Structure formats: structure tokens, C-alpha cells
Length: 557
Image 1 (cartoon, rainbow, N blue to C red):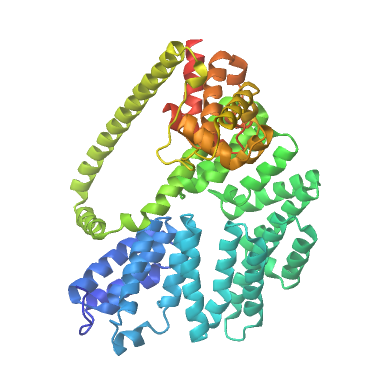
Image 2 (cartoon, one colour; image 1 turned 45 degrees about the horizontal axis):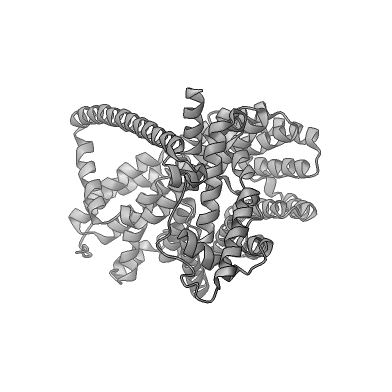
């Protein structure tokens, strides 16, 4: 049951509120505010003071967001939203909330930001649209301007660039024309929006449009708003120079950016420029320098970001190492990319599940433990040791399992007379079950055609699809599907994937030169357009990642 609105505020509550107000700013350590807000939440629940509870939940939502604890942030914002959606607020509390940023329009926007950070663009867009609807209905100038900009960021994320630019421009126009939004807020948000529009034009390779909007921002002096704004404009200029192939100029620009960034933030200034600077170095074929810079940037980002959010950085770094000839590191980072993509998908599915009532009870229990510092240190130390031992155990078990799978695979290769049948997956659900409309002669001709396709290794070509295969063996896709289903008990895609993985297993075993290729090159050589698809199917068919299979083959030769 939710607490009811009640009575006068205690001196302890007033002291906590004052402490939070003094501590809150964008440079503050979020965990300091989190600790104070947890105490405020506990006190609010004890005193049944709805205003304190809502205030605490909002601070906990925002500060956990700053600390990249998006799951926790979502949980707190959703609890806060309950008070508004169930009409639990008295007139007294509503008056107290006036002048704060605490309102459904803000909560929906922050929920959208959290889901966007987790990669769930669809859910983020749903929350942003709810915020937008409220802003329009209640005529809230700031949110009417800013929410379209947030929607623009989502549109960029799903590569709907024209829609993104349209939303950005709506937001920018409303910011610049507003007579209500204070000047400092207008300039700050306008500066960010101008660089976002320029970036989106660059994604579309529309360099002149990017220059125009950038010059508009400069004419309004947005680039002088803060040191961070100045850097953002400088970075766009460098990106334009890269696209214009003025690489030496771009390199000089990045050297200036590097100096400015490190003055602005000596500990993590690299985060402003590492990816763009690395791209410039790579275009100049300085691959080792590009990889080194990228790796340094990733290490700094890992201190405050979740591993799965570095997915694209891992992919880029793998490409630089491949170009530099360091295949081992390239494979390692491609593997990190694949695994981080998998983690991202899991995180999308688990956001709601993670924060059921049991999780909230667990958090309350942890608060109690934090007060007993000595006990906490002992328990914490023990947990570290246990986790370390558990990690070593899992590592050992995984290594043993990989060795076992590898041995089984080698034994299977040696024992099979027809090695092309090494991988033979059966589908439980088939597209076309009946072959009653195909006479025996046609059925046999299609099988013979498939045999030729296999002998000629046509399945290794990226254009190999059911339409092209049917065309090559002079039949239609329906007959082709029915024959494959009936004869092989599998669908067309399974049939082609089995042939490719079978070929890869044997080729890697027999050809040490093929083993020296990067995972990306191997996947392209056997017909895959995506490294992810090859890695996924290889693991599914063999129980091993391609890189593990290659390492074990190299170790026995």
C-alpha cells in the first residue's frame, strides 16, 4: 500500500532537503546525492510524507541515470509515476511541487532517456511521445522545444535521418523563438541541437548542409557558450575535413581538439575526440596509432559506461587491428563486439524483470547493510574472494567444455566417411511439407541440380538465395523449398547455413593459411554478409566460437 499524505515536516526532513539542495549540481558525485536521497526516501516512508517520497524518488532516478545505473533509474521513475497516474496527490503536495522539475512530462522524458541508453529505441520513443503529448496539451514551452530534439536522437539511432533533422529543426526553431525559456537554457540547448543537426547531415554525406547549420550556430555565438560547446563545434569541423579528404588539415584540427579536451578535463578529455581522431589516423593508414588511441578511449569509457554500450567501438577497433595486421587482437575485439551485442539484446528484455518487488526489497536490505560499515567490509571482502573463485571456476569449466566440444568435433570429422555431412541440422517446422504436386522426374532433377550447386560451392557466394538457386537449376522457389524440406528435413536457410559451416569447419582444419584470416574475412569468404551471423551459426552448430576453434587447431599443429 502506498503511503498517504500526512502532517507537518520534521526538522530531520528539512535538514536532509537542505543538504540535497546544496549538493545537487551536474558536476557533483551522483553517489553522494543517491545516499542522501535514500535516507530521504526512508524518512518519507516512515513519516508518510508524499512530497518527500516523490522528491527522493526523482533524485534517485536522476542521479542513478548520471551514474549509468539505468535499470535502477527506471525503477525509481516508474515508482514516482504511480503517484501521478493514480491521483494520489493532495492540493498541498501539488503546490509544493510547483517550481520543481517534478512532473509527468519530465518523468516520461527521463524514462525515454534511460531506455535510449539501454539501446531500446522503440520503448524510448514511446515514452518521448507521451512526454511530447503532455507538453503540447499543457503548452509547456521548454518541453515543446526539447522533446522533439530527444526524438531526433532516437531517429538518428534507427537511421531515419530525414525524420531526425525534421525533429531537430522543430526543436531549434522553438528554442530560438521562445520568449519564455531563459536565455542561458536556450543557448545551451540550441548549441547541442545545431551540432546534432550537423552530425546528421554528415551521416547523410551532405557536407554543404552541415557547414550551413554550423555557420548558423557560429553566427549566433553558440560555439562560445561553454568550453564543451567550443569542442563540439571543433569536432564537427574536423569531421567535415575528413569527409572532404583534407586529412592533414583534419589531423591538425584533432591535435588542437586533443589539447583543448585535456585542459578541460585532464582525466577523461580523450572521450571528446578518440573515435574521430582514430578514424582520421586510419584514413592516413596509421592503423597502429588509430588502434592505440581507440583502445585508450575505450578503457576510459569503461569506467563509467556499461560494456554493451561500447559495441560499435569494439567493432571499429577490430577493423583497425585487422588493417594493422594484428589478426589475433582483431578477432578478440570482434568477439567482444558480438558478445556485447548479445548482452544488449538481453538487457532490453530484462529491464522490467530486473525490478520486480523482490529486487526493491533487496535494495532496502542493502541500505541496512551500508550502515554497518565494519560488517559490510568483511562481507564485501568475502564476496570478492567468492566471486573471484567462482569466476576462475567458470573459466576453467568453460575451457574444459570447449576442449571437450573440440575433441568431439575432431572425432566426428575423422569417423565420418562423407565429411560433407558433418553438420546436418533438422528443422521441426518446415515451410513446405507436401510434394504431391511434383512428379518424381522433376523431384530427381531438382536434387541433381542441388548436388551440382554443392559441388560447385555456389553456396559460398553472398548472392546465394532461394531465388537465384531456383533460377540456376531451372525450377521455381516453391518446388525448390518443397524438395529441400522433403529430402533433407530442413528449410532452405538451414540447408545453406549447414553447407557453409560444414565447409568452414573442414577448411579451417585443413588450411593453416585460411586460419590466419580475420573472422570477418572468413565469414565473407564463405558467403556471410555479417560477421555476427557467421559467429552465431558456427557456435550453434559446433558449440564453439570460431576464434576458439581456430586457437585449438593452431595449438595441435
